[in-house]
Image (tube, rainbow over all chains, first blue to last red; front, side, top):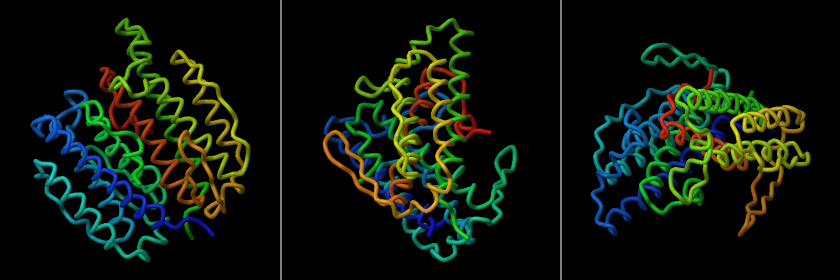
Length: 167
Length: 167
C-alpha cells in the first residue's frame, strides 16, 4: 500500500481551496460590518513589491489548476486574471475546484515518473511528476494561500489557523 | 508505481528546512549590513496576537519532527523553545533535519493507514497516516515557513519566492 498521486494532490487541494473560500467570506463580512471598502483588503500588500491579495488568490488557484492538468496529461484551461471583487475570487475558486475534480483520477495516478517541463520567465524547470507535486505544486500552493491569509490577518480580519486548515 | 509516504514527507521537508535556513541567513546578514538589532526581526509579528518570527520557526520545525516521528512510529524528541538568536534557530533547524533523517525510511513507508491521534489544547484530532501527512503536517509546515518568510519580507529583507522554494 502507498499514497497515490491523486490522493496526495486533488482532495487536499480541494480541501484547502474551500478553506480559502471560507476565509475570503469572513474577510468580505468583516468589510461589511466595519464599513471598509473591500479594495482596501483586495489590493493590500505586505510590502510594496509583493503581490496584493487578489493576485495571491489567482496564483494559488493557478498552481493546482496547472498541477492537476500537467499530472493528468490534459490541457491547462486559461482563467483570465480579471477578478476585482470577493465574489469574483469566489467564482474563480469554484471554477478551479470544478476543473481539478474533472481530471480523471486514473490519469493522475501513476504520474510519479511523468516528465514535467515548466517554462518560467527566465528559465525552464523540469521535474518528474512526484518531485513536481511535492516540491513545486504543494509548496507554491500553500505559500500563496498562506500569504492571502497573512494579508487578511495583518489587515485585522479575525481568522485563525483553524480557518486555514479547514473543517 | 506510486508515491511512498517517505518520498512525500522527509525529502521535501529537508529541502524546505534548508530553504528556511538560507532565508534566515539572509535576514541575519541584512541586520548586520543595516545595523538592525536582530530582535527587531526575531520578535516581529504581522499582528499583535500572532506569533513572532522565532515561534514560527519553532513550530515549523515541530510540525515535521512530530510528523516523521508519528509516521515512523518512534518517540517524538522534545526540543525546548529557548531560541533567542538567528544562530540558535539555525541550530534548531539542523537538529530537526538530523532527527527526521534518522527515522528509518522503511518505518515511514507503509504508514498510510496508521492511526494518528493528536491531543490539542481543546480537542483531539485523529487521522489515518495519509490524511495526517497531506492535510495536517504539510499544510501546517508550509504555513509556518511561509509566515516566517512573510514576516521577513514585510520587515524589508530582500528575499523572493525562489528563496522559499529553495535550490
